[in-house]
Length: 221
Image (tube, rainbow, N blue to C red; front, side, top):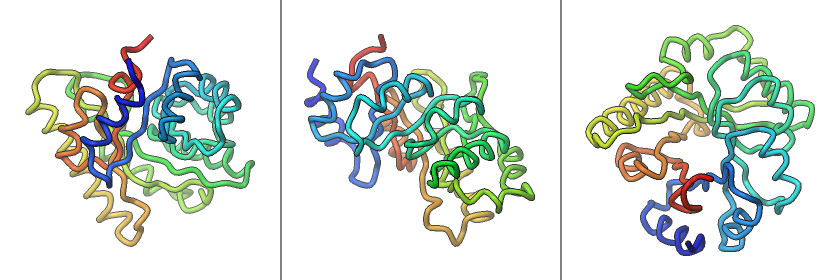
């Protein structure tokens, strides 16, 4: 399996305006370095302690994305360096990210995670919960975070129409929030959707960030 060739192939398939996050969770540092040496610098991890252990061993110009469920007590492990957190699902978490980011005098980009799948995965907001976060009286005090868009995962299914529906729904949520809360903010522009099995559908439905692991690094360990 050739990581460099895999990256080339995927980059040919995705438009220039779509960001590719190479999902390196469970993969050893050596394989991440191989992808880095092939010219790729954006990686995604889903466990805070695994990411904080890998960080010191790898080049510092890597743009790290956190894509997994994040507990508030784990934010401190990644706050010094993470570029974007895709999985914000509560005001409490947003406040903790802000607190830890401020300790390092930096700002962290965040995406609100929505539950769009028809299967009952545990995490993700609905539109009412998201509005509650955005209308929170303290939201304006969080000066060390920036909400840049939305994230969601489609149902794991072979039914392409269903996946189209779910991704289209996330795009509608994005449009609604943009109009209601972020109309004057160019930084609110990201729709993170699409993984190894469904990124082509996601791109058709307007994804700006795809999170691809096994198509680059091979099946999960």
